[in-house]
Image 1 (cartoon, one colour):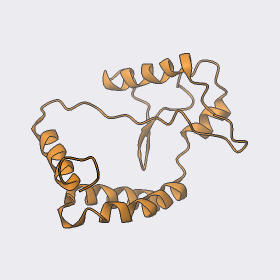
Image 2 (spheres, rainbow, N blue to C red):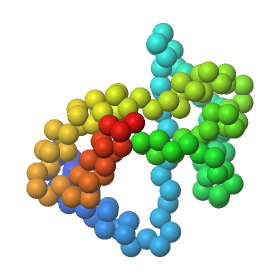
Image 3 (tube, helix red, strand yellow):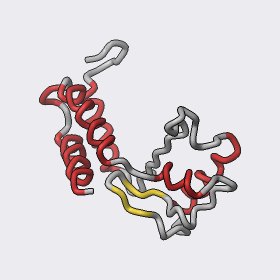
Image 4 (cartoon, one colour):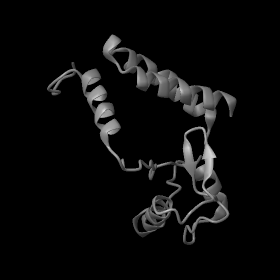
Amino acid sequence: NRPFVGYNMADYFQHHLDMGRKLTDPPRIFNVNWFRKNGEGKFMWPGYGYNTYVLKWISGRVHGEIKDAVKTPIGFVPNVETFDSGKVDRKIMKDLLHVDSKAYLEELKATKPFLESFGERFPDDLWKAYYSMKERLEKN
């Protein structure tokens, strides 16, 4: 258990997975990092109104209107050549959408002790997802 949590988090994760299996049309999950910085420590994505371009892309993916997403070890990302990013420079977009496998592998390694802290009750399906991502990143 963790402070301020009503029950064992490993059980919570399992309950979440169990509920997901019952859904006939589960919601799609998208991840963004609005706060990624360049080598100079400046935010790469301008934010504010520009976030609507990302939401437009997500909507297009959900509704099957965007078919040229690029498969990466962590999921699909917009195609740099066709993504409508407003006036954001294509070079910046390429950097934003780049998947740094080495950095992700380091993050996975750093996360593993936290996941192990949940003990034997931690769901096997989440370990499978962890090792599947690790394998995809190592092949990249």
